[in-house]
Image (cartoon, rainbow, N blue to C red):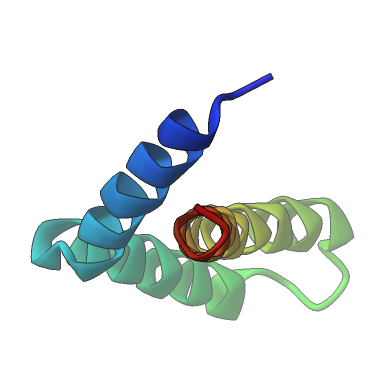
Length: 80
């Protein structure tokens, strides 16, 4: 289990990452590549479309996890 300080530190680092222009660009490029890939798949190619969906979902989960860390850090700061 993480200490309060670790949660606060993780929150600060997550906030830095969410604001990082390179990370934003990388995630956006992954999403763009996925959508391009999706557009060229056949309508019956459910396996490929599912794989692309999972990649897109992974990118969103990274963002959600970072936001959750920021929120958790803020909660810990307020409870000090």
